[in-house]
Structure formats: C-alpha cells, structure tokens
Length: 175
Ligand SMILES: [Ca+2]
Ligand SMILES: [Ca+2]
Ligand SMILES: [Ca+2]
Image 1 (cartoon, helix red, strand yellow):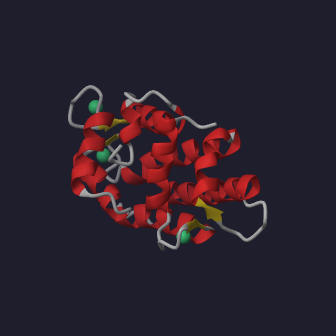
Image 2 (cartoon, helix red, strand yellow):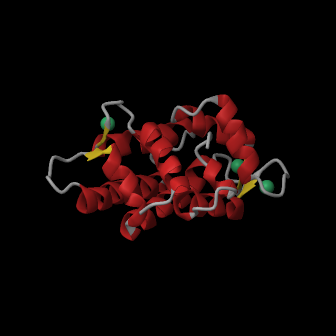
Image 3 (cartoon, protein in one colour):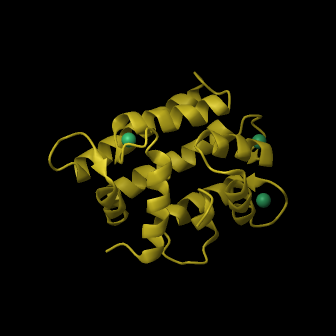
C-alpha cells in the first residue's frame, strides 16, 4: 500500500498530468505534458528535449504494462495512485524528472532560476503561488537557484519519500 503522503502527491500529479481532463491518463497526456515543458523552455528539437520525450514514452509504456490490465490504453486515477508501489513505473518517472532538468535549464548555466522554474510550472498548469512554494522547498540552501543536486533530490523525494516533511514533496507545487 502506498502511504498517505505518496497518495497525496500522486493525486496532485494525476490532476496535472491529465492534460485533457478526461479523468484518465493516456499516451497523449504524457506527450502533451512533455511538449508543454519543452515548448515553454524553447527547447524543441534539442538533444535534451529528445531524451526527455523518449523517456516520457517509456513512462507511458511502464504505466501501460503495469496498470492497463484490460488493454483500453488508459489509466484511471486509482490505478495511477497504485503506481507508487510499482518500482518499474517509479524508476522511469524519476528518470523523466531528472531529464527535465536539462530541458528547463534554458540558459544552460547548470542551475534553475526562478524564471526558468516559473515558466515550466506555468506550462503544466501550476498556479504562481504553488510554484513559488515549490521553488522555495527545492532550493535547500536558499541561494535563489535550484542546483542540479537540489533538483535531483527533489525528484527522488517527490516520487519515493513518504516523509511528510521532505522538501521534494513540493516539486509539483501545493502539497
Ligand atoms: Ca486524459
Ligand atoms: Ca539556468
Ligand atoms: Ca540552491
């Protein structure tokens, strides 16, 4: 059973990932989610974007294989929440999160500025206030940037931690 903390995070993730708001995660949702992030960063067609989009496809395939038992090519909310217990899905999700760093770091200085962060969050429908809270939680040393290490730690904690005070819980804003 996934913990209460993990369930809250995945509920939130489901809402953001269900781009067409039809109550199911489908391949097209993953594609649209990745495209929005890439477009907002102006990174379409870059090798970083290609790696990111390929990984989004692997996340979809992992979800489909693990959860789409009736083969209708869509994942319900309850099925999605249950993915917290499936290592294969979580591993691919963490990889996708890690790869997003190089897409979002638009100026390539090896860290995510507040502007870069806000652009990404806006593109996937995270309100400004939540986005700020997320930034503050991920920027552990408070230097005004999310370093690669801070970002990776945030991604890991978002998908894997059941500690209610883990900063990474805020990676997708409101927690
Ligand atoms: Ca959908
Ligand atoms: Ca940057
Ligand atoms: Ca920092």
